[in-house]
Image (cartoon, rainbow, N blue to C red; front, side, top):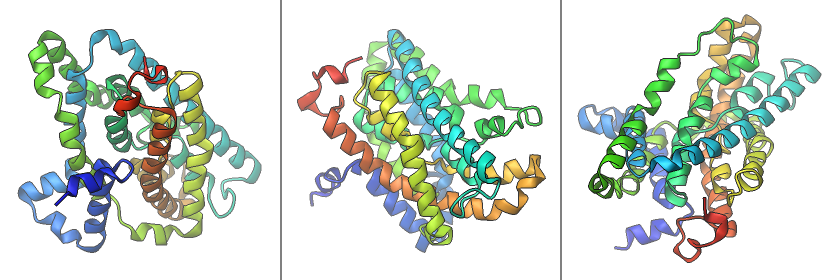
Length: 325
């Protein structure tokens, strides 16, 4: 059976196909993911953090110290492009139409979903199409994988302490990998296949956080919110990647999703500002739908950008100047 070859025909298939399977399992037979022991630890959402941590370590071993400034620049450009455009749009809607927002989408839902991106999905996609600096850029993008920047935009930073140590902890595996990889070339070679081997597992565990029924619960507003995320904050990230980073744009496309963590953001905001409480339930279901829809569409968009403009993963265009640092 040519299972792998068939999977590779799907855009981003090494990650996307396992993700869809994981989502199907979580939607229709979630009890399988709750068997306990190694099954739950590896295949359920409980495995996401460990697998991404391992991915960061493998990436670090392939990262030469001279590439660190490049990774910092790429990550900062992507972070600012997506965050600023998403925040400006959400604030404009809030100031113009109030907290109720537009088209049944509250300002809270807009801000919570448009100012961040799915870090695990980004890692899986650039692991498939990109190079080590692209993956290392996630150490910067970690800043927008959660509610922190949303709270800051809402003017709540004085009421909520950003856990700096959690951000430090997120990059320790990456730094540890850099140290080992730069100390010993043999370690770098040993760990080289690590990312490609772990990607299907990352995809499945990410899928195990998704319930397809969330799309139905979010309704048309959830679909529209997903389009807002992709177009209003995603396209600027692609353009910034192409014209500021001088890259093909696939990394910008890979940040065009809504983060799974953003599903919990409305409740976190409402705890700080009770005026948002009436919008928490609708915002949560709409964001859940946007997370699922963008998780499906972003790999297709990233594959299209990579094939159209080039990427290091395609051997026929590895020497394309657009793919060089």
